[in-house]
Image (cartoon, rainbow, N blue to C red; front, side, top):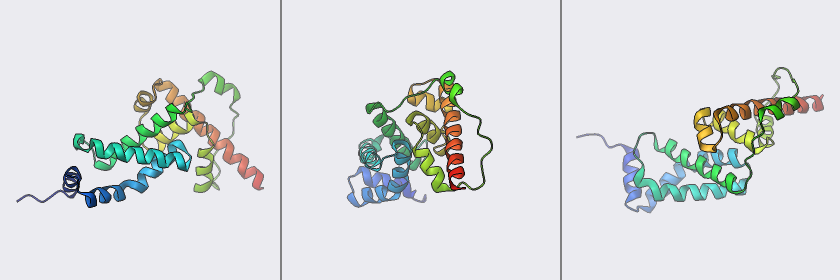
Length: 182
């Protein structure tokens, strides 16, 4: 007798319409998926909307889950795509060409050791949407530039440029905070 895979059993129960199983699945992933949505859309009310829409899609599409990845990774992909579509609908995604950015970007030196997580989180929220989304998808969600470019409908070089720009803007903002504190 083969051992029962708890994830597969939960999925099967959800597919049968078992409400407690659906609550279990939701509770298991809601916090991580909310944080993913929030990193992309920034505003709590928008992240909540993305989360609600995402879990609706999860339960509607659960029958198509092929177990090529973990359930959590599959759900995260739905959340990321829903958040990106949300930004597209709001026309918030704008990407600055490398040439325009390079002329404006100052040389700001090395990262100080005094930056903490809350400072970094606040600085990320202040990035232009295009930079923030690419930065988040690349660094936090571990997506490659090729996948990011495909999802956002941009070139791979634009994705890399936005990531570089985000890092530089973050460093600049954090250095300015540090200077203000002195």
